[in-house]
Length: 87
Image (cartoon, rainbow, N blue to C red; front, top):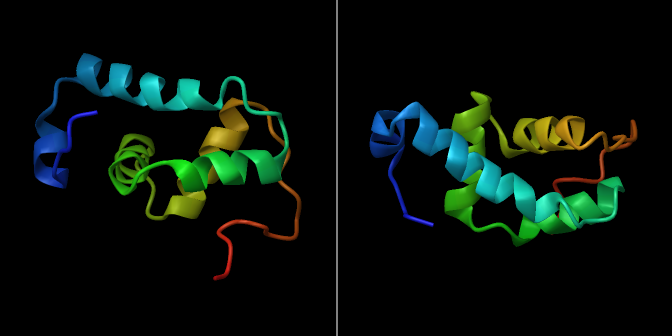
C-alpha cells in the first residue's frame, strides 16, 4: 500500500480511495465473524491502513472505524467494549 499523508489522501481520486479501502476490507473476509477475531485483525493493520479507514469512513477514531467494519461484515459488537485493548 502506498503511504499517504492526510492531505495527499484527500486528493486521491474517489475510485482509487474506494479500491484501497476494499483492499483493506478484504483482509477481513476470511476472519471468523467474532468481535475478538475482528479486533485482532484490526490490530494487525498498519497505522497507515487504520488512518486510511478513519479517513474513508469519515470518523474521528479508530474505534468508530472498527465499528463500521464490523457493521459491514455483520459482526455483532458486545456492549462491553473489548477493543481497543488496554496495554
